[in-house]
Image (cartoon, rainbow, N blue to C red):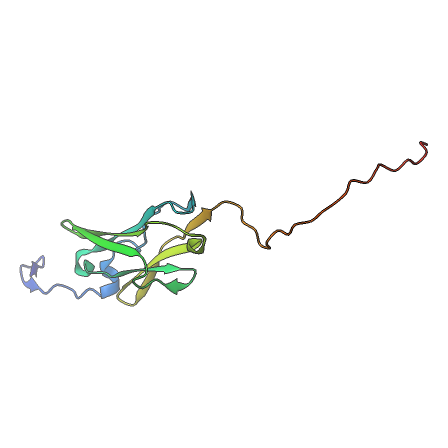
Length: 150
């Protein structure tokens, strides 16, 4: 209880849940574009600091608008201090393929607010490949045309 200037007890004011956030919550900036070759491993992360009341915030990974469920390796770590908890969600692929190309984002929900990270673009480059199988062809060289010079 607080005391008023006259010395009487003043009950604390109720604070709406939304005003508990001193600043708007947002994911920290991370790497924006990763270029790598096929079969290499890659690991990247999203991080956000949330009030301790939400330290169990769930972070989900999305690729090109679809949630990634169990197909890859995702780990979330929580680092609490006095007021906020740093939440770091790591995502790794041990051997990338061209199908891993795309835009990856993190999402979390605090109260009724969905918070979305900036995208991380993964570009997997590989060796050139044939789109059609080559065929055996016999060709003969034709002599150059002998047209009069002008």
